Amino acid sequence: KQIAFDCALVTEYMMQHELEQMAPKVRQAHDMLSAGTGPGGKHTGWIRWPEVYNRAEYARIKRTGETIRNRAEAFIVIGIGGSYLGARAAIEMLCPAFYNQWSRACRKAPEVYFAGHQMSASYTANLLRLIEEKEVYINVISKSGTTLEPALAFRLFRELLEKRYGKEGARKRIIVTTDNTHSPLKKIAEREGYETFGIPDNIGGRYAVLTSVGLLPMAVAGIDVDTVLAGAADAVRLCGTPDVDGNPAYRYAALRRLFYDKGKTIELLASYEPGLRYVAEWWKQLFGESEGKDGKGIFPASLHFSTDFHSMGQYVQEGRRDLFMTTLWVEALREQITVPQMADDTDGLGYLSGVSLHEMNRKACEGAMLAHTQGGVPNLRIIVPEATPYYFGQLVYFFEKACGISGYLFGVNPFDQPGVEAYKRNMFRLLGKPKTM
Ligand code: PA5
Image (cartoon, rainbow, N blue to C red; front, side):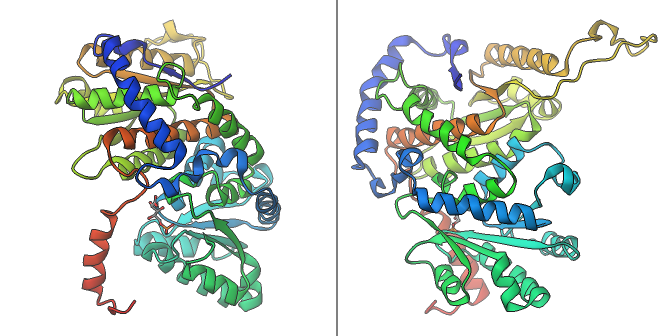
């Protein structure tokens, strides 16, 4: 089985000939992406990564992951943007809900927390307090090694570990994931003797979830990373052909572009599983940072149903018609809950007795897709057979490939993020950062 891309509901918004006219542009984008001749072509190492990843480093990731899994009570992933979203997406999608609240014996892995993805004093102080009595390991992840948020968090957690365990004890509990050559973090790691994992030069932050960036935290959480990579490797083939008809990622990219040309400039990624919340966050970063430049790009937003039917649902149905929706649907769940039979039917739910919640969610999804389509919001759907490591790997690669192609269809460089510097310049000036740094 594979993830499936379903565009059956968009026929009234899109003529077949419009898609056919996109085909040569998609092929041209494919050629540039594959040959690395387009803008940012130096950063296309992720395309073949699931097949060519460094086996020796990978074996070390698994060993270190297992050591931490066995020894740590709390594992802190320090990173921001592409340096944490993929790992968080995987953990939230693949580990049971309320993962951190399960007993260690049940989880067979440490609690996992994230830091360095913002600068909130209250979040950081509470996290520091929460892990006071726990055996802690940290993985600081920063490709550049210069990003302020994770650098600050690393200082704080490093200080905590050194105070608690001494320099030697801290050394065993700090793992650094960073650029192999240019990063100041690499220099700190070498000086202090921390275990280090590299991030390939030719893979940018938001395309790095299948490298050590995402794989080590996944391994610590007990996710089967072999299967994640196997899913991604199969997706390399699934999303490999240059034609729109045979390649679901390209079909998705082409349709998004056609919607954009028709004024549908906002894409809503809708999911029905709370475990997919961070897949949506990862997806927003991937597409938002890759496409949103030169005054162009689809604005990526996310909705979580059925919760958001009672919040944003009204807007989607009747607000401005500049939206299209992509539903991320998980076909089969491990857990099943059915509505209980009760003698008393005062709540009026007797007609649902014996029906599973997932079936009801499915009907809500089908009903909403139809209603939104009729209300002027075209709906695409990505069907994920199950929330497993294999399909997580497929999904990641599917979106990465679609995003790379989509960037080229927009005529932008999908692998840089020059706009991110603007806030930094102002912030550093306001903080009085010395000019030489
Ligand atoms: O996609 C990207 O390159 C960015 O979102 C980075 O991942 C993010 O800015 C963090 O950068 P770094 O890993 O260098 O700390």
